[in-house]
Length: 319
Image (tube, rainbow, N blue to C red; front, top):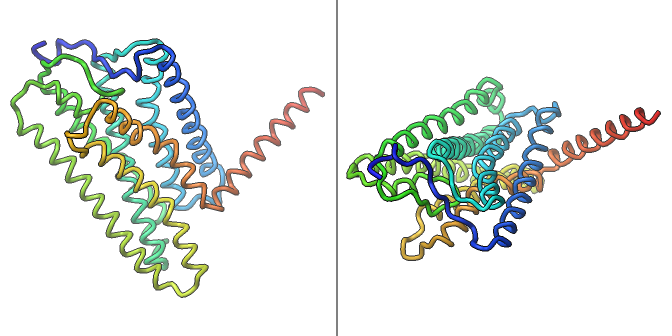
């Protein structure tokens, strides 16, 4: 294979060789996927329908749920189909699209988590200026910047990756297409381009990470000065879900990309890939709703209203 154009498809890493384990992986992924759909769908519907939740924090949470739904839908359905139909193939175009969408959505999520850290910082450290700094127009601009940043990053990285000639086969040691796996198949000596990809990704990642850390340093300093125990508890309740989501996202992503080669193996890489690409979208709704009384009450009200309407509609049909 002299270049990428001669490759019509890639072979993904199979979860297991036996048919029973393949079906087990299918049902496991189906359960996780349905949980992610239900959890994120409930948050999106609740925030959109409940006017009491039309605040910057919940607006950003709605965008986070949309990104989570998109990211898990980019990888898991294809992996489920491969396990169900006992196949490993993905087309060249499908692989490029999967990389673009995954980087776009995960990058957008990382930028959005950075914006949400700023939202928490303003809410706690500058509460009197909250309405000014985070008005509806400013929130929309920040959300658009997060989505746009993810889109431009994905466009740059995907175009640069697939412009490299590929001549080391078409087997990927992953259950979905990912940039490092494609770079392993490259026979190009354009190390400058590959180094550029790493530098761009590292700068964006490190910049957001530093901003989040500095925001929470200021937040914790402000929280420790709150005299009342109730105010301190409320401040921590506002920040802990976001901090937990950020920690889960960053720790799994960093371990996936920075784990030493000496302990790297296909099985370990597969487990880590599941941790950072599948688990966060499914767990994030639970993290945000667990300590958020306002969101839990709104979700319960929506479920109760939907159930009441369905019962009323069924009763009217019977009459």
